[in-house]
Length: 301
Image (cartoon, rainbow, N blue to C red; front, side, top):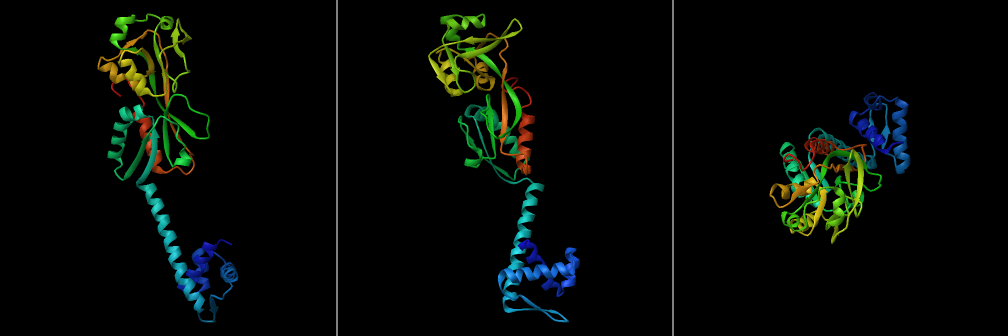
């Protein structure tokens, strides 16, 4: 039999001074209440109470056990109440991880708005370009841009970031501006191994998809390094708008091949399970989906 239920039946019987009253409280038969009490005594190997025609009499062991059980049941009730309050009023810690450039430029203002709305939630944010182990490292949520590894994690698409092809004005002045994706074969190209197939960029040409083979002096998984290298005039970069938009707005990079669509990278929220998801985590995911509804890196997102 369930030990906690048996303890609750024992405490109620003592408090009410009657097995019949305990039976009415729990909606049990008199025989079932007696069975719970006998089960406790059998498992403990001691007599807890003596039944007389007029009242229940606790033994010395029963008195000690009653006090401890009453405290344990009170602690359980308090724990249940606290857990339900966390669902009613979102509060407490959420741990999440996100890519560095995306987190610094676009996630930070979103989280500031979220915390203004839910001031009793505390966020612990780790920015890293590696794929974190959510369960092993204790994260509630991971945000990822681009290709997702095969895993058992639940993925929810939050939004997209268009792909841009850009170069520094100085590079274009020295090497010329490509007019067609096929011209990239003659240029120094910097590519992100974390978001594209190494050495392959993709465009729509004459209404159909075309993959262009590129080569150049730099291959990296760091969006920041690729962007900085392009600003320095090292070559042409192909990357998500969230990483390049600020440099374009500042005139440090110039978009090229704008007549040839190059698709977009998906932004996903990854988490362990939909079952028993905390209210605060659900609120955060819904908030981010709304915040990133527009393509990220365009129109000042």
